[in-house]
Image 1 (cartoon, rainbow, N blue to C red):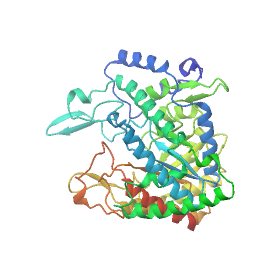
Image 2 (cartoon, one colour):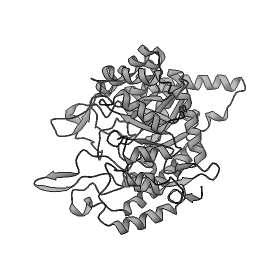
Image 3 (cartoon, rainbow, N blue to C red):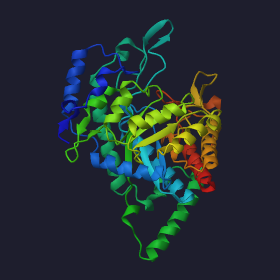
Image 4 (cartoon, helix red, strand yellow):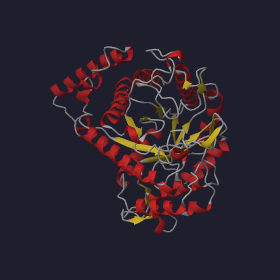
Length: 449
């Protein structure tokens, strides 16, 4: 990948269209300098890896695999440490082991990681004690501190996002290929956790079963390479188009455009306007593309998105990530799935049970009830079972740390506990125990399909 997209015909067709949720950069010359520098940087991922993920997601779309996509609501520059990254990865690996073994299904593992530094916001400004400042749009744009200096959008942060993403990806690659992800490590992933948590103890029992199965295979002379490493892909919301476009390259093998900032990019509920820049940008790149669909999505919207983003009807190209809310999923989803299926499109259907179930606790903390998260997933499975279609996966905001941001779960967190370790910069995340609880329950639902 040697040619930048801007020099390639069709590489910047989005620029003449309206683009929602973009930063109001005060210094355009500084922005141009940063973009020029980013255009000279090496790719963070390779086109061949994106193609491989597209193949894996094709299996999800055909009903042959399950997608586990998870990670932070918004990554932070000060959380690019080995411990933070390992804890997130460990949680996803544990969830993947549960789903693979207990659900008897191949699991495609995709992190909301190494690029999830930008956030759409419902309002452009925030007011506290009579002071109004620009809203926090993620570390890629401005600072979380409520000061005028921190909240001014700074294009230099786009370079920091690139370097933080590179450091994160480097460590993830090392963990997933260097022995840490070896299935023989299923106990080691759990040592600090099993004593204190009901879900940890349940996981440990499953790990013993996996051990016995692997010992049996070893005794039979079977020791596949797949047990030693794990395929793990990166994804993020393609929100700040100046950054995504600067990291779009022409693949020297095919002449196609790829956004090399991540393997899979998704377009959010707030930026999926059919005649706007984000959909146009996504239509030009060959990465696997996701689109978030909220409760206002019509079947016509979904079919038009397929025409724009997957005109060849290629399994694995397009993933619909539904985020309806537990109270709406059973009413809103059936028509979408039914009409998309009738149109002959093979998209992967994924459930995001987080974003439709947020509320504000009396303490002022934004939170989610674990029971609501679980109920939306149940509704998702019920709809697909009723239609004879494949529930393709889950998309969750989670952390490997013992935070107190969502209420409920087996190791129950109460509303009065939220203040103890409420560490998210934006949306509440499931902690490690809640994430494992969810994985076990999803595995049971999958088996019941």
